[in-house]
Image 1 (cartoon, helix red, strand yellow):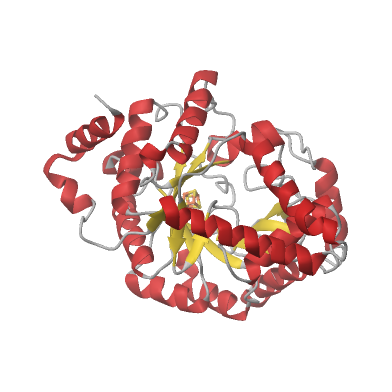
Image 2 (cartoon, protein in one colour):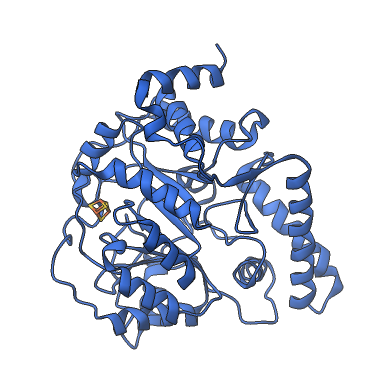
Amino acid sequence: MNNENYISQTISVSYGKQESAIVPQTKMKQSLVSGWRKKFAVLSFRLTIIGIAIKSYNNPWNWIYIPLSLIKLRRKTLGQHYLTKLACVDNRYYWGLYAPGWNGIAFQKFIAAEMNHIIPVKQKVNRFINTYVAITKKCSLQCEHCYEWENLNKKETLSPPQLKRIVAKIQEQGVSQIHFSGGEPLLKMDLLIDILCSAKKETDFWVLTSGFKLTSTNAKKLKKAGLNGVMISLDHFEPEKHNQFRGFKEAFYWVENGVQNAIDNQLVVALSLCTTKEFTTLDNLYTYANLAKKMGVSFIQFLEPKAVGHYSGKDIFLSDNQIKMLEDFYLEMNYNPKYKEYPLISYHGYYQRRQGFFAAGNRSLYVDPDGDINACPFCQTKTGNVLDDDFENSILKLQNLGCHQFNAKQN
Ligand code: SF4
C-alpha cells in the first residue's frame, strides 16, 4: 500500500464517523504552491535579493557574489534538496517558519541582515532573526512538557507599558520576527492588541498558543492589529490523547476552532507537535501530517522534548532511531513532489545538528515573563533584563554562554 492510501485508511480508522465533525471539508485552506507558480515565486525572491544586494553594496561584484553565497549557505545547511512547495497566505510567500514572508519590509531587512553576516552592508541591519516574548504567566492548561511550569499562574511582574517598552527595545535592536508566548498569550487579548498596535510594522508578528480563545472575533482583531501568524500546539491527532497531554478537556476543540478562525482571517497557521517518545512512530507521523493537510495549515513544526520545566529530570529523550525517523520524514515531506500538497515541515533539530545553534543572543533570544533574557525557551540561562540599562551587556553575556546542547557555528 502506498503512503497516501495508508494515510487515508489510518485517518478513517482513527476517526470513523467523527471525521467530518473534526475536520470540516468545505472550509477555506491555506494554499501551498508548487510547479510553475512556485518557480515564478522563487525567481521573484531571487530578483528581490539581487535588488537588496544592489542597495546594500557599492561594489558590483557583491551584487552577484552575495546572493550566490546565500544560496550556497542554504545548501550547506539543507544539503542538495529543493523545496517542492511554498506556502502562500494573504499574498505573501513563505518557504520557512522562521523567515518573514516575501515581500515586504520584514523580508528585506531579514535578507540584508543575512548578507551582513557574509560581508558588512551599508545600512543598519536587524540583529535578531526572531525573539520570543512571553507576555503573561497565566494559562488554563497543564501541559506535560510546559517549559514555563515553575512560573505558571504566578503573579505577573510586568505591566502593559513595560511589555510595550520591551518590544520597542527589541525592535530598536532590529528583529525580523517576534513570537508572543506565555503562559497563554490569548488570555491577554487587549494587551496583545495594544502591543501589536504600538509596535513598528517592520517585523512579522506571531502568537504561540494552545488555540484557547482563538475565536473568530479574536482572530479578526489580531489580524487587523498586525498579526501575521499563529503557531497552535497540537500534540496528537486523537482528541482524547491531545487533551490528556495538555491537561485540558477542551484542548482539541480549541485547536480545531483556532485553526479554522486563523485561516479564515488570513493568518499563517502552523501546528506545533511535541515529538514525544510515545508519539514518534512512522504511522503516527503520517497520520498527523494527513490531519494537518485536511485542516489546511501551512506548516507543521517538530519540537523534540527537552528536560526543562514540567519535563525536568524526566527520561524524555528520543532514541537515535526516532531522530533518524523524524529527519527522514522531514526530508520526505518537504522535498518529495509526492507530498506537494502537505504542509511544510520545520524541524529545528535537523538544522541544529548540522549547523549549530543560532539562538543564545546570536540571532534569537527568549524574553521570559519577568523580562529576563534567556538563550531560548528551553535553555533558560538568564543573563539580565531587557528593561535594564545594560541590556547590551546582557546580550553579550548570553552570546558568550551559548547553548548547552548545540555548539554555535556562526558563518
Ligand atoms: S505549554 Fe503553554 S499552553 Fe501548556 S501549560 Fe505551558 S504555557 Fe500553558
